[in-house]
Image (tube, rainbow, N blue to C red; front, side, top):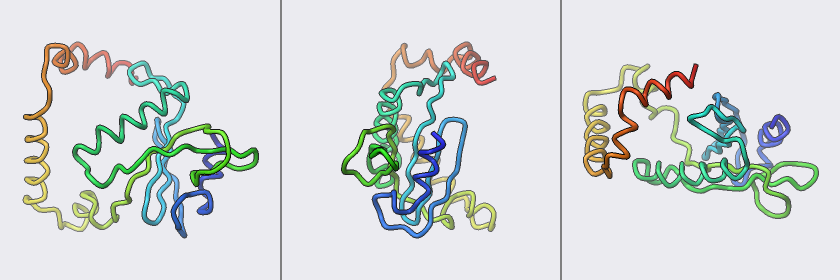
Amino acid sequence: MNTIISDLQDPGSLPDRTENVSVLQTHISVVFVADFFVYKIKKPVDFGFLDFSTLEKRKYYCEQEVKLNRRLSRGVYLDVLPVLYDGTRHSLKGGEGEAVEYAVKMKRIPDEVLMKSLFYVRALTEGHLKTVADRLAAFHLQAERSPEIDVFGEAVKFKINTDENF
């Protein structure tokens, strides 16, 4: 994973022209932030409630992330790209090589319009919050429901997932 991270920090390894690449990491992902796009790979981890332990699972969950998040973020979640290894370097540019990871490609949202940025400069308004709340409420009102789905909202299931985090 360290070699992949090192290689993908090189702007020449990305499919779109960029001058800068910064790297952010969470417990489950490595995110490469370029000038106009963001590329996220999933770490090979298994937390019980979340299993990215195999390449096939990471590819599947990248595809699911794009499919599901497009519902609320049209135009942001763009594609799933293979991270190819040609024997010397890892790249997202396509071409020759073996797929050794998969990355979610997203449109980069300018930092100055992120909600946290608006908050810090005291520009976040009630209107912003209402827009988000209304959109989420409409989404949940239209969401599929069933007894099988309801189980995931029960306190017992929530406690199991929380306990697995610690």
